[in-house]
Image (cartoon, rainbow, N blue to C red; front, side, top):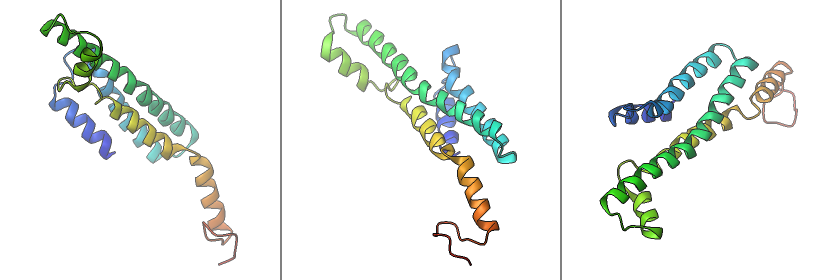
Length: 145
């Protein structure tokens, strides 16, 4: 949640809403908040699958955003210096401050964190509920309380 709030705040402060494609991370973050709220209220399979799907979209959005930022930086560098090419162009495009070429990778990071949370979630919930009812401490080998 903290990562989502921080990323959304940063995107809004940077006015990352001037073109339609720039709304993609903002929309994904908004949908993620809805999915998290749904999953908090109803820990069922449908809400978990929806959350996982959104997290996969986050993972995909990261490299797509890196590509779009990189492409914009390449175009800008070519306008500034038409003779630039090769390694010099790649380095300039990757290290440009605006837009930061690698910043969208944080979307993939958020998606991977979400997927790690959801990994084997139903099994974890089911096993902790079963052990509590049977009088077995979670994380032990089955000794009775």
